[in-house]
Image 1: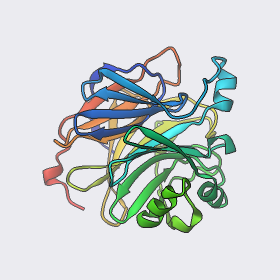
Image 2: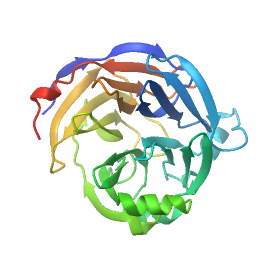
Image 3: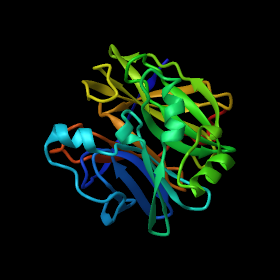
Length: 286
C-alpha cells in the first residue's frame, strides 16, 4: 500500500538532460547521464564544477543514432576504496561496458561476462541501479521491458572487486537473484530505477511508472515512488513522490538528506535535482 504522497523540494536544474545515476561523496555530487560519455561533478547545491571523459569520441546529435550508439550509463556507485563505478544498462550489447574511476584515472570495464549470464536469466536485461550493501554489490534489474522482471542482483563484493582489478565483471561474482514484485501506479507498471543506502544502513530504491513495455524506447510516465526494503528484502515502505516526474537517481548525504534526480526523456529539458530532507529514519524499523 502506498503511503500519502510526499513533495520533493526542487534544488536546481543540472546541465544534463538525462541524468541517471548519482553519488554523494562528502561535499561533492557525482553523476552520469545515460546519453553522455562523461562523469560530471557538482556541488550538493547543484552547481556544476567539473567533467571527466569516460569514453573517447562524441555521440551523434541525431536522436536515433545517439540512442543506438550510447553506452547508456544508468548506474553509478561508490566502492569501498573510494573509486566510482559507472555501469551500462546491458539492454543491448553496445551497453555491456562500464568505467572504473579512481583518482581521476578511467579504466573501461568489460561487463559482458556478467551481463551475458544475466541475459540468460531475464527476458530483457536492463541494469539501472547499483550500490554496495554489506558483503554484496547489489544491482537493480529494471522490469520495464518484456516480462516486467524487477529484481535485485546480488554480486559477491570481494569477487566483484577482484574482477574489477582485471577490468571486467564476471559471472563468478553472481550470488543470488531476488525478484521484486511491484504494483501499478495509475495503471502503469512500476519498475526499479536506482538503489541507495542511508546513513542508518537502510536500503532504498526508486521506481518509475512507465508505459511502452520496452527497455530501449521511452514511454509515458505517471510518476515515481520511493521504497525501502527491510532486512529480508521485503518492501517495508512505498511512498508516492510529487511532482509526477521520472526519478532515475538517488544519493544520501552524510546528514541523511536524500537527493533525487529526474530524467524528462527530452534533450531540451534539463534534469531537475530534488531533495527530501527528513525520511523519519529514527522511527523506522527493519
